[in-house]
Length: 76
Figure 1 (tube, rainbow, N blue to C red):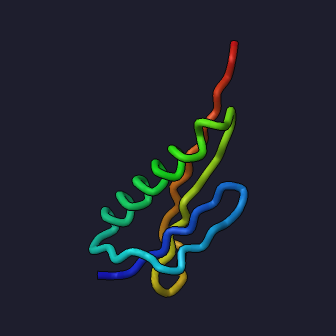
Figure 2 (figure 1 turned 90 degrees about the vertical axis):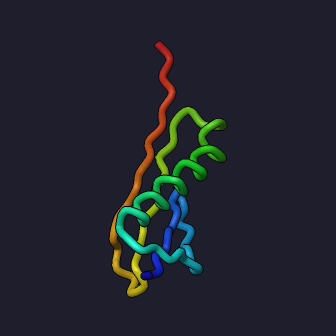
Figure 3 (figure 1 turned 60 degrees about the horizontal axis):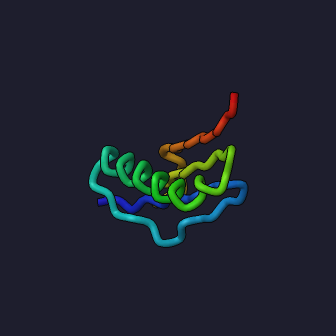
């Protein structure tokens, strides 16, 4: 299994120095999606607009994917 690092970005980049071992790209995607959902759960309730992302790197530091969530509340 390879180790992947899930850096979070919400106006400020927070680098993941620990990482998670994943056995497939599907597992990497699932981890990124779950992480983004958890990240959003803590931040979104206090915002009318927000963009957040998880950027995934492999153990060589090469970017392998990015998951982005954009959230906006509009009133008519």
